[in-house]
Amino acid sequence: MGKHETLVVERRRPATGRPAAPSIRFRELNILLALAVLVAFFTWRNPTFLTASNLNIILRDMPRYTLLGVGQTLVIITGGIDLSVGSMVALTNMVAAYLMVSWNVHWLLAILAVLALSSAVGMWHGLFVTKLGVPPFIITLATLMWARGLSSVMTKGFIIALPETPYLYLGQGDLGGIPVPFVVLLGVAGVCGFLLHATVLGRHLYAVGGNLQAARAAGIHVDGVRVFAYGACGFIAGLTGIVVAARLGQGNPNVGGAYELWAIAATVIGGTSLFGGEGTILGALLGGALMAVVVNGMILIDISSYYQDMVLGGILLAAVTVDILRRRKTP
Image: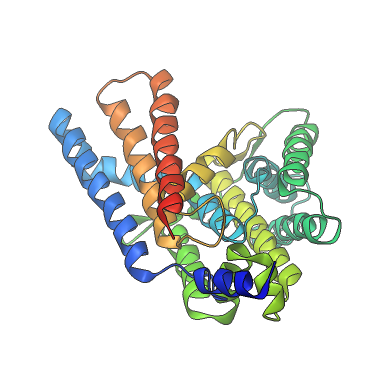
């Protein structure tokens, strides 16, 4: 690449890699508009949609995959992907239950152990990607398989019922009338949003996904940034497993099926580009909210569950297509 071409690339995609703020607001406003239309439609078809009890159900159910979407956003912004998060939810919810029931570990220590395990697995992914050059798709797919298998091997497929402890509050409690899982989601999203938009590390995450070689030339520790993104995604997957176990009151090896696909869908619907370098945490939250509203609304108006995945797949396809067409028009 000649000198002139290098300058063109740098002007087109600056070292920060951060998309222009007006573009972000425009995409997120579109999602909000779609949410408003969906809420109005489902309320028209079934007035119970906007009742307090149904909204509580949506807020309690939404964090399952939206938390994973927040973690996935960090990885996708750097140009990677993590297919293992659903299986990691299955593994970590089993590990948490196993430690508390079989080993009689205090629930706080069990939480810390699970978060340490899931963070280590995430960093392991980052090291394979950066040091060995293994494609993210392959290493995280391998983890998807062994984590799912290990979660079943631990108890030969049986569930582990959890005792009545304060731990269950994380999944079943309310804080000021708001479900605790949703409070956890907002807390994680707030921390990650601050990280992305108000710190040097956040600018580096965008830069790595925007133009890897330009980021290296700018002196950014590219490998460290990518390992951090995968480690953070793993940490959030472990936290999701903790919340899911508390919500169910048991460790269940069968949970988390297709959660990784839902997480990616929430992220992409929220405006995160699969090509890297673009995306926001708010977008992931809005994408998750849109999916939660669609699923809940379809149940209330008696649409078969067989059609739910088809509808969500159509929404995902539309979001990806819009992203590709928008990038083609960008000079």
